[in-house]
Amino acid sequence: MTNQPQRALGILGLEVGLAPGEFPPPLPYSVFNPATFDFPLIIETAAGAWADRVIPGDPTLEPAYIAAAQRLVERGAVAICGDCGFAIRHQAAVAASVKVPVAMSSLLLAPTLLRQLPADAKLAVVAADSTHCGVDLLGVDDPAARARVVIGGIEGGALWRNGKTRPPKPTSVAEIEFDVEACVARLRAAHPEIAALLFECTLFPTVTPAIRRMTGLPIYDTATLYRMTFASVA
Image (cartoon, rainbow, N blue to C red; front, side, top):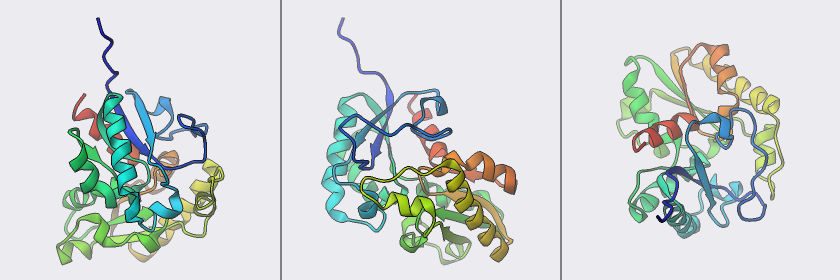
C-alpha cells in the first residue's frame, strides 16, 4: 500500500536565514511549537520573504508565496495559513493558486469580530508595525464599521528591531509581553470602548494568555486562525 501524505496545516513561513527545513527553537505557546496544537504543521518558506519586505508590502514576493503554497499541497497540506499577518496582501493570489482553504492572516477575522461586538464597542488591532497596518488591510468597507477599529503597534520595541534584521535576532517572551502590554494599555486608555483585541503578529500568541489575564478581554490571534482553518477540514 502506498503511504498517503499526512494531513496537516501548511504554513507559509518567513525567511529566517537557516537551511531549508530548519527553524529556530519555538517559544512556549508559539504557533510553531508542536505542543500548541493537536494537529501537525508543515512549513515552507516563501523565498525572499524577509520581514522587512513583507511588513511594508513587496508585490514581487507573490510568485514565491504561490510556489511555496503549491509545495505545501504536494506535501499533504489540507489547508494553508500565513506566517506574518502582513502576508494578507497575497491572500487572493495564493487562494487562487491551490485547491485547499487559504487564510493568510489573522486580520481576515476583523469583519467577523466587529459583528460579534455591540454597535458601540471597538475592536483593537495590535500589529508588529502599525505604520504599515492600514484599515484597508482589514476588509472593512463600511465607514461606520471602520470607525470602530483602532490600530496600535509595537514599532520601536525589541521584537520590531530584532525582526527587521537579516537573519532575525531572537526575542524573549518577556520582551514581547512588555511591548504588547504597553501598546494595549495605551489603546485602552485612549479608547475605553475597546471590547476585543485582534493580534496581527505571529509571535503574539506567545503572550496571549498573559494579556488575556491582564485585560479580561477576548483576544483573537494567529493561533485562533490556525485552529479554525484546520478544524474546517479535519
